Each structure stands twice: as structure tokens, then as C-alpha cells.
Amino acid sequence: MLKLSQKDYDFILATYEHYPVSYDADSSISWRIVGEKFDANRDYVCVIGAFDGFHIGHRDLIAKARQLADEQDMKLVVCLFDPDPAIYFNPTSSNEELLTADERVALIMNAGADSCLCFTFDENLAPLGYKEFLDRLCSMFNLRQLCVGLDFKLGAKGEGSFEKIVSYGNEVGFSVVGIDLLMQQGVNDKKISSTTIREFIINGDIDSANQLLGHFSLLDGKVEHGRGQGTTFGFPTANIMCSRRRVAPASGVYCAWVSNGVRLWPSALHVGLPPTFNDEKSKLNDWLLEAFLLDCDENLYGQNLRVFLSDKIGESQKFDSISALEEALHGYINATKELLGDSSIVL
Image (cartoon, rainbow, N blue to C red; front, side):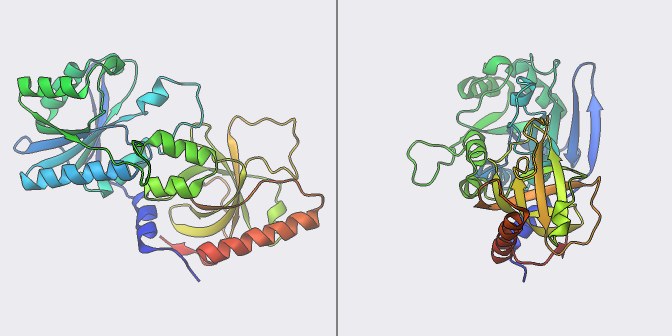
């Protein structure tokens, strides 16, 4: 029996949505426009942000901007960056990325934007001051209203505070609306943030992360050949190598939905190098997801899979025997069936 709510199904489907896209550049800066191209005869409400994770605070911001646009018969454009500036300025860091730029764009469009303007964040864009950046936006579309969080900063070294942006908007002809940030329920003065969500995932607290996200925590990677051990237990396995950029949950066993964009499988998932078989001297630049897929008879080698984490169901441990491992694995599979069901579905 399948256990997937319509809301969760719609979220998974939204991550795979494709929209019209056009690319452009000038002498130094490049960008892409996803969705509608800009209409010189229409006015625009604009939202700027990183939107990593696209959590419930981000969704609230987009919803309020959408309402403002509809009330004034304007279009809504959301401006973001690829890569996230935080990643650009920390090129050797890991455990940073909650969503790729394409995933962020897909979810933003699904939330109601008419267009997404995604700038390539590089050595040409990074030193741009907030006035120069806003001037560029004004030259691309008829900016009439800018919606940002009250703690928003823009431009090189974060020089463009909310107050400065309001002042400059008054000078050049657009208004600025500050949106109060959503707070964590029951937590005083603790805003919902990508940083907090990242910490929850790294600590293995997927339930808390998913509550703040308003959707499943998301991972992805390419299927590579593994030991084939899971197949001998009666469950097809997919060994998924994930980029070090993607936020890695704490080692352990999780239940998750796994998809190749065509079909969705309930799965028991081990995060980290399998301790029973791992040569402790081996090192990997990326990190491993070992997924035991229910109701799957497909060859997935070489495919990119997307993983939607639902619950943590066990700790990573080393077993004394294969029979003990097999017994534990069957327990994880049964827990997955209880939480997610035992049937795959076509997207």
C-alpha cells in the first residue's frame, strides 16, 4: 500500500518541472531567464534572495509578493544566483548546499513566480555594489516594487542594507516592502533559516529539518557499481555517490523516496560508508548513499537519482555476521513499508 500524501507527491513532481529558459550576457555578466520573458509594457514586483532549501519562510515571502503583484496587476520576478554566493566565497567547503540552482528555480516557479532571473555569480558579479546591481535590474524590466526580508543585504560586502535599499529606491523610482521573517514555532527570536535546517540535517534530525522546510530534505547523486550485497538479500540496491557540496545527513539509516524522474520507489537508505564492509583506510571525496529499493526491478547504473528523506529509522553500526546484517536490513525494510508503503509509482 502506498503512503504518500498529495502535498508530498506534488512537491516531488515540482522538483522535476521544466520551464522555458533563455540565456543572455553582456560584456561581463551572464544570466538566464526561466519562465516568461520580460514584458516592456508591464510593471514588476521583484524578490531577491538565495532561497537555499526554499523553506517555509521563503515560500511565505514569495506568497506575499505574489499577492502584492496581483493586487496591483503586476508581474512577479524572483532574482537569485548560481551558485549561491555563500558557496562561491567558500569554494573548498562541504555540507553547504540544500538545493541546486535548478531545484530552487523549479520550486520558486511552482510557488507562483512569473519569471526567475538567475545570475551567474562569479568574479564579475561578486564586486558589484548594490546600486549598480539595482540599476541593472531596472534596465532589464520595469521594477516598481522590491520585496525583501527585513534582514536582507545586497551588493559587495553586504553594503546594501534594507535602509539603504529603501533610500535608493526612493531616488530611482521603486518602492521597497520589508517582509517580517517567519519564526520557529515555540522558539523566541529564532527565525527560520537555511543555516538552522542545515544543522538539523547534519545532526540527523530529519523530522525537524522537514518541518522547517515544509517538504522533504532533498539529496541527489549518480548510481555507481557497489558490492551487490543487497541483491543477495532480495532487495535491489542503488549506490548513489553525492557531491560533497550537498548537505550530508549524519551516518545512519533512513527511509526515503528515491526517483529517477520517471518512477518513485520507497527505500531504506544507509548514509555513509557501510561499516560492515568498509575498508577503514579507503577515502572518498564524495559520500555514499546506499538505497535498498522496494518494488524495483530496473537497472539504474549510471542514472542520476533524487532522494527525498522522510525519517531516520536506525543508527549506523557494524555487524558481527552477514546473518545479523540481513536481519537488521529486513527490520529497516519493514519500517520503511510501515512509513512509506511497499509500492512504487509513476511520476
